[in-house]
Each structure stands twice: as C-alpha cells, then as structure tokens.
Figure 1: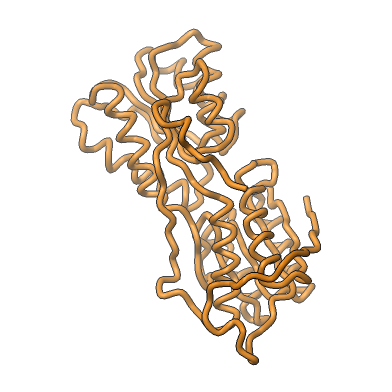
Figure 2: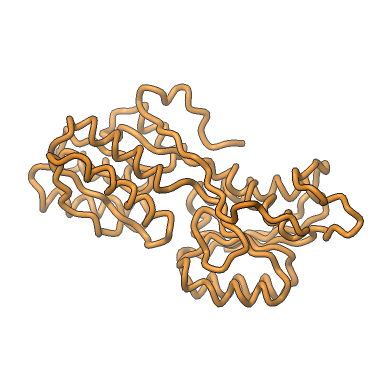
Length: 310
C-alpha cells in the first residue's frame, strides 16, 4: 500500500542549528516505510512525519509505504526510494538486523536513514519509545493489581526490537515478585487483535487458573479480552503497551483491560523527521538513540489522558 502526499503549508523553524545556512541541504523528498498502515499507530507516525516535513519545506514530497510486516516488501520499498532519489528515509524495520543491507544501500546513495519506533541496525539515528520502561510500568501495575501473586502470561509478538524490549522490561519486573509464576512468554500474537484472540484462547484452554496477562500492544490486549469473554473467564488483569484510541474506550468500558503504557506515535514520527533533517544538514544528535518516555494509562486516569495526537 503506497500513498504519496504532496505537502503544503507554512515554513516553521526546525529546531536544528545551521539549517538556514547557505550551505544547508534542502529537504525535498522523503520515503517512509512502516510495519502496517492498517494499524492506527503507524498512520499517526506518518502524520507526524508529514507535519514536520510541511514545516521544513512546503514543497517537499513524502511517500508512505506499508510493508505489512514483510521484509522482502520492505526491501523493495527502500530500493524504490533509492531509485527515486529521496533525501531521507524513515524506516520502521520489520527485522532490525536483516534490514541492514538495504540501509547500507541507501546510505551509499547519500541518503540519511532514521529508524522509527524500532531499532534498525546501521541507521544514522533511531527515535523510539523507551520500550523497556513501557514493559516495566505495565507489568508492575499488573503485578500489583493481582496482589503480587498468581499465574501470569506474557503474550509476545513480532520479534522487532520494541517488542523484545517490552518483554524484557516485563520479565525484569515480574522477577521481583517471587509469588508470581510466569507460565508462558513465547507465544506470538502477531501484533493484531485476531492474533491476540487466538493466542489467548490457547492460554485459557491450557491454564485453568490465570490471574494476569501482559500483551505487547493494544490490539492484542483487545483480542485477549474478547477471548476471555467468549470462554466466560473473568478476574484476569490485562495490561499492554500503546495507549491507542481503542484502548481508551476499553479502559472506560466493561472489559478486563486495566492499563496500557502509552506511546506518542505522532511525536515519534515528527521527531524522527526532524532528527533526519538535522543529520542531513550536518547536525547529528548527541545520542543517536532518542528514547521517548512512556506513561501509564489506567482506569483511574484515562479521563485525563490526551491520547494520540493531532
């Protein structure tokens, strides 16, 4: 799925020193490849990148491509960006290591590459949520809500760096609760509602006693809650990561979802574009790994949560 957007709007300051220098390189064309444009999270990343590009150059051309979690498709998309002569590529890597050859090809062609949401090996910089922290705060809340004891599962997902970090953060917290038993942590919910539903059905069939579930994103949490309702299982605390619009409704509704560690995909896409433009013009960030903090959204504070932006 490809969509090409011609950007128009007022020029704003980018926040990077030197961008108005006579030798500054104009940002004219940007390619963005993300996991799936069927997920509102990645749509918001694209919107943030679009608005940032609009502020820098109203004539910039931005193409957003959906890799649909297919590495070969993402390779093709990056090669197409290279062939079209883009100045900057933002990549939400389907596989953080396997994407390396494509990144090197882009850099050899003089293109700046910035990873967004997940690490991309060899990229000039990466902008992502502090996913270890997100996993920690979500699982600590789950552990506290079940009284620090009982059976829990981690519902895993596609093995990108963000997912791996969330699971590692969760495990670090759960190891601090000796009366909590982790029954499973390797089942892949595919990052989707249907995947979460299918994996949760398996858990509920295998485990007659289950007190807590951590899912690596909100669609899987919603699918897990649906599975519990279908099988008439209750008193399960479900937590996740994303702070997506659907989870806001779930936290306000009659579900077993209790919390989500929020992300700001719009801010992530915007900052990734700005960082990339800075690098393009010789202004590298002090730390090439830019981590955005996560905050926990619960039933108690959901009414104050601003949600995904703009």
